[in-house]
Image (cartoon, rainbow, N blue to C red; front, top):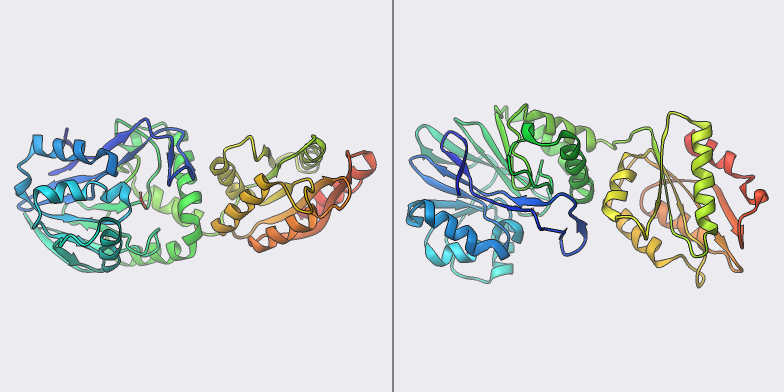
Length: 395
Ligand code: FEO
């Protein structure tokens, strides 16, 4: 099925209601997703991106039911990752000489994934354009490291559509396709989760790219990303949100993240949360047991936080593996402008707090010295330091 989105442009992608995880199992999908591909039928017929490999034959069948594949003049591969390039092998088997417009890095990633198949690559860079007839053209914009070296976006003049690929996307299935038709609360929740877990490590690059895009003075009437909704109602709203999120974003929130063996560390977590509420009633306080919570959702809450408090008991001279793995992920996301403190119970050696503090510093947090370290189960005397810790954390 083709779905006209503007002028002679159709959505020809795949809505993936059943998808449960993405990037292997590293990204949780709570509300489905989509792989958006688009077909432009001007004097030239152009396919923009494809879908994930498991859906490649359905994708090609759908195209064949609606057009003669030989009418496709060229394909634009904005990004080599297999959720967008996964149907190229199937479609190129049908129309093997069709030019593929992509970045130089995309040639490497596509050949790296699918082998050297003699595809007819046309390498493009920012500012290059191609005429598609009816007075319209496609202009290519390099989006290097947003989020792969090969990423790019394609702008269509005349209809003023930015095919932004991963940027401005969400893992969010919306059969109505458009941002104004979607549940706004879920849309922004998923857009932020996507930004945090996929794009935040490249926030500095993104800020510069947004400036560069602004400098190109493109009239943007629609942003058509490769996942989730098409932004047709005030599309610039998501660009403005990205600019805000990329600038060391924080809200008046503190998150307490911990794991526990025999509930001692859990008790400290909740005591700290109570104290934050006491000292700063307007601050949003959230508590997460990391082994019981979805790590991508927790990262989104950390992103919103101005400070976090992380706890683990000492186990085998170290910390719980659940917390260690989570801290490794935390470091990857390169959050900025956030404070942190550590806490944990122990029975004898008691290294956990020091290890947590080091790992939090390594992850880019401003770690305060105040900590709560409790031998065996916490007692009132152990909580005596909580008010000062919270005061310094909120300062
Ligand atoms: Fe949606 Fe980077 O692929």
